[in-house]
Length: 131
Image 1 (cartoon, one colour):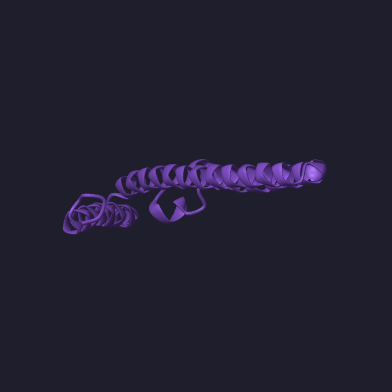
Image 2 (tube, one colour):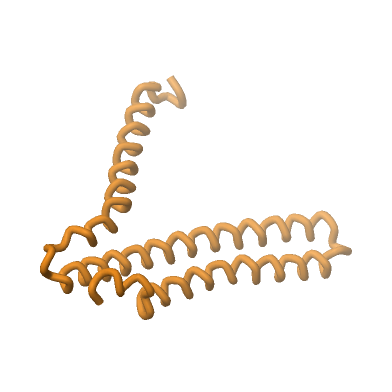
């Protein structure tokens, strides 16, 4: 027993959640492949499916970038506050380094936003899908 719960119960819950996660990842990886499943004579059907796959991919890319950026910024600010608490006399230098690091982390999220805008509005791959 772990924490009053039988071990096999936690293991079963973990396996069940891993099955759900693997099915979601399989769906996300298989979704762009549907853009190739249009009928041979209908170029517009393939273009519509391709565009919808691009929109979904851009949305997931932005969500992952925002999640990673926010976790990184929170960790950076936390460590900077700990460092300032340990050495208050170096607060100016630590704060400058923290702000520079926050700018770098935020610039990565802005780059993902730029790539998403390019894929949505000026997609260089659209010529291959009849658009």
